[in-house]
View 1 (cartoon, rainbow over the protein chains, first blue to last red):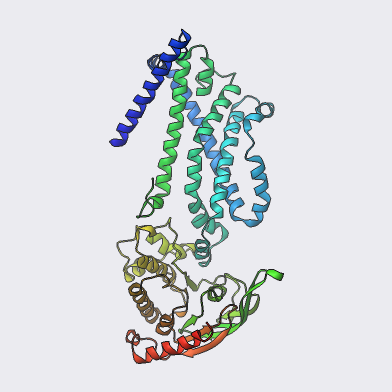
View 2 (tube, rainbow over the protein chains, first blue to last red):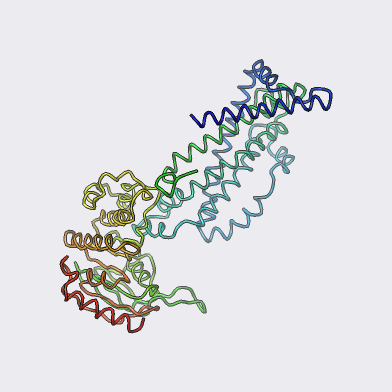
Length: 258
Length: 243
């Protein structure tokens, strides 16, 4: 209940501040610059089906990118962190590629993949993939040797060591990294949907929706709010997932989560 | 049943080589319980891990039932220092771990209730007292019904009351299950309470300094008896002489 109240207050505060900025800008510049929240709300209501459809497409696109990043990034990161021989080979590759912004490669990605669905996924995956890899690698380096000995002494195969120790030990860090990367991922999604989505109608993604209504500020702004909500949605989903899958982190006296 | 022959273990190579164990030989008969004592960091754990097949000897060899140990054997179980429980698994999942890895389907209910862990099956290790965690570690090893039980300081870092309780528990389980046991410890009284024979190791690299017979071992009343005290004194003198 207190949490609901806190969120309600947060929303009131943001909309209040937004209204004040709109008002101030209008006073200073002498003409409307930023539409008021209620104007955006009306615009959202008038275009609700287009907006919802755009939200759904973006959400699905982000989900697919997240799942791909996770299922490809996790094994690569864990192997790089846990297998010393692979680490020597993979670490330089990871560290050289990690800081490279995929945005800088948009032109080449366009030339390579065209303007279809694949290229948009590639951009988002490129951003999220390295976050997962680096988090998994870091966490895998700090697995307690006692846990490995405990499992190996029962005659576990390499795969069983991964299943019983390496994956559960690193999952909390990886999920946290994924959650923290949602902001970056949404940014990349927006870029992918605007720069590489110019052939799409406005209901094919929020980035495209915002771009399409560039000259209708109230509608575009409704799209921006929807994009923020999309980020919030994934943030919450990942948090709930972490609490469910890593329940052990949140029990006991010491393990109390924040 | 277990034979350690001229075992040496060296970590690292060349100039950085660190000898951990240097030419150790002893044997353990079927059903016997042997304590290995030595100063901290003398290589006791390395010796135990070698018997478990997790560390390859640099030279010498280890035989169990006349077969050379070349990897983990399924009839040998290991109890680790601080229990080595997996924090993401519940009490039941931890106790079942060794069985499930070996694709065995036996239930752990019996062993959990024998160790006083009934009702805690769905708790995580972080929710248990230290003494209970150790018992889960013991349950995990004993669930396998091993023929050989290797124990690496299973009572380290426990308060003295809990330590004595778990020592008595291990003694009872040894009588009941009849495993062959090797317990590594740096606690002199523990060695005298739980070792039919006591192998005394030197500081690193570990060599055998002496092997003490301890015929009084086996009864709970032994602890505190004059005979027990005398044996503790003898052992303390041997260890103190170069310690």
